Image (cartoon, rainbow, N blue to C red; front, side):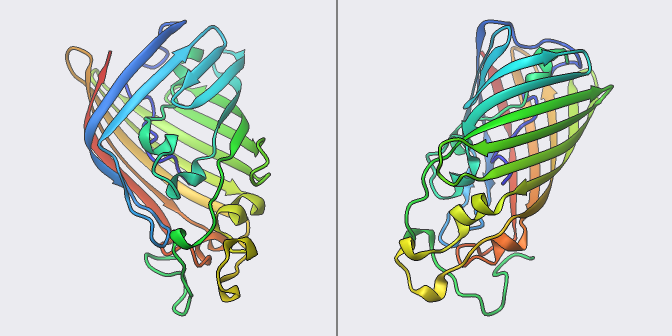
Length: 277
């Protein structure tokens, strides 16, 4: 799953400019209109209207909208961090998830120096998320490597469930390119996300503990999910910024064949204004 609103470097900065002061909190808020589609049966689309932005960066440690991490390596072109966060996969099962109410921003490079819509099968049985057992929160531990060259950035992340909720893993490989003008910043990001069978089956598999008819039982499998994200940011006066973003993610068949899933993709749109305190 793509983070529900992942606005890359929300508050526009020049390349290689350190926008966040060390050991100081940054608070911001984005106001606008948008939504993230929910691919699950009985799941409502998630509105994106008021999105807080909360971050703190020390010399090495940092907190960024629900992600707590530590920077082990800081070079001009590359860096390496380890971190903890909450598995965003559960966001579609519950509105009160950090991915739905915060504004995740991948701004670490600023500190470091820089299937179709509808059912997946014509005869597929479906079951609502309200009819299955609760999916617990999972705490993911991860490691992320960054590599920057001019206006391009590569990222490679590997996460593992440390809480024992599903004991699954996730791999995320992304390439992002930036175009920077005096007050406007545009970026395009391509992603390939791999999710293990343990992770996918925990959220989208149907088992005995769900207390449903056995005809709904399903074992989900691992797979790759490609995604694309495009964002436009314009710096205005008095700490105001204009933001616009759209993303699309294709889900793999090991997930979409589940009776819980009725759509083969996830898309998200948002446009509005942000203020940095």
